[in-house]
Amino acid sequence: MCFPSLRPKPTARSPGPRVLGEGPYVEHSLSDLLSSLPQISRIEYIHSKNFIHRDVKPDNFLMGLGKKGNLVYIIDFGLAKKYRDARTHQHIPYRENKNLTGTARYASINTHLGIEQSRRDDLESLGYVLMYFNLGSLPWQGLKAATKRQKYERISEKKMSTPIEVLCKGYPSEFSTYLNFCRSLRFDDKPDYSYLRQLFRNLFHRQGFSYDYVFDWNMLKFGASSSQAQPCDSEAIARPRPHLCPSAGPTYSLTCWCPAPLGTQGPPGRLMEEVEEVEELPPQNYWPVVWIPGPQF
Image 1 (tube, rainbow, N blue to C red):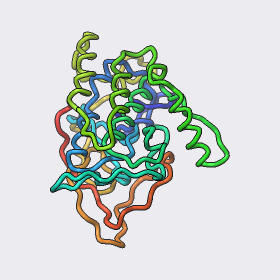
Image 2: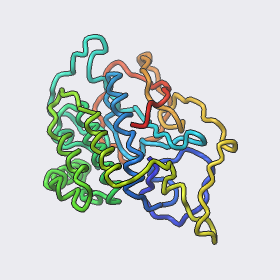
Image 3: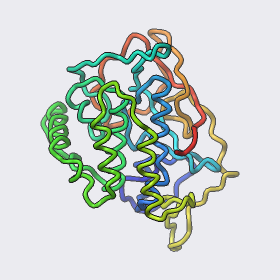
């Protein structure tokens, strides 16, 4: 998504993928947040291909370019893992004492507790992403500690000691309902994605919002003009090409996975600063292949 998280002075940017955390800060409205909730569908699609993402965070959602500027894309499958057999749908076994995999800020509570991740954890992480968009920061950000392990423990303690109702205070109840639902799921449960989408769809309509597809982050101020919108000339922006590199392409995501020969170095990708301790990779590595995103909801 393109809800920048910092507040630098607005400056013009060259055409390129719009990533959360990059570019000028723009205050975003509840209508924008609700009208751009295809993330649930993106995560559902990944799960339907027998994988979990394991690093759902703002940096891994992008907006398209040109005529596809209203489409949301999910990227970076470096930590993704197969959670069930493609033929039998046999779920991976429940395990404990796992290292934290992903980004501690958005990790689920079960991930902090060392429990093997499953579909529920991707969706809980998305809940923290949504509240990060709402609040601008999360209560467990900025905690100091002498070591990484101690920092993870402090984040975990703060996350577990912050009731969902307190985290979501002042915002529509659908956000707390969403997080409570995710935390109630059992390890191998199939989430009710339609129910979660309907939660926010109902809220969107109850608030009287409409889909105008004009987002706050496209209405940036430039120079002396306070009303000039950021241009979005689809003819001036080259159509993005598919990439195998996990974070190089602005408009791609997962459609299938192709096995990489053992000992082969995968495509280079940007290492995010907040990616925490990663468990040892299984013998079979996988590379992501391009897919065309599905419907927004």
